Image (cartoon, rainbow, N blue to C red; front, side):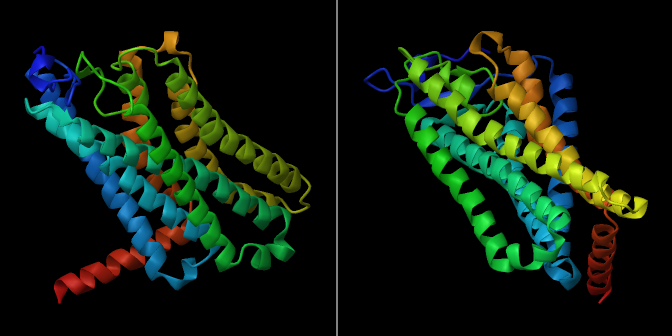
Length: 320
């Protein structure tokens, strides 16, 4: 189905509504994809909500590492909810349109949660660095106040950068076409619909990607470089194993999140392919959010024990 943009333009010929492209013209394929994404979305919501609830309700997990993990789970919930519901609607309905204001709102929240997560993952790496490389000063240098400030900075940077990027992009004129070759209002496909020269906007998007993806990633690499050096110098094999075990989950999450994000936002414009971009976006919006709770719970005995206690309490309340 091709959309007639003239129906969605005002007297100034500026597009007031957009439409998302179809995944497939085959109804059965759309329904299958809808089912798979819905199941992953529900698994992601349930897993991240359980992780956050288990951490907040179990005093034994009231430590800096789990404080950041609870924040990560909340960010993942917001991240997926900013994109997936509208995508699911577009898969099984002809109502694939979205207003210009709605598109800007979706872009803001997607960027807000995504950038905040980039910063928070760096804070989590710093926490592991302090715990392993400076254990004697860990309690004072990673106090509750410090952790709260690091989390607030992560959320604050995400909010400010997302607001600036969204305002900058939607200050452009959109005079057609109006079909977004993607399943949500991401920055590159929206820029592709703008009229006139968008080179400055593309440069701004790339600069933000460098600042918010590469910079935190380099901080994470530097932290883990120091951690690895400290672990290798430990005399006890048991100490080395425990230290590596506490870091491996975070490293795996970082690899999944930053890997897919870097490929999407740090590539040159000429190398972008709509099909590949959609697959990557599905991966970092649905798959990684679903895998994160699994990664942290499977590789962490304290989280597994807390989850069992939380689920046990819910069963008792249900029986009452």
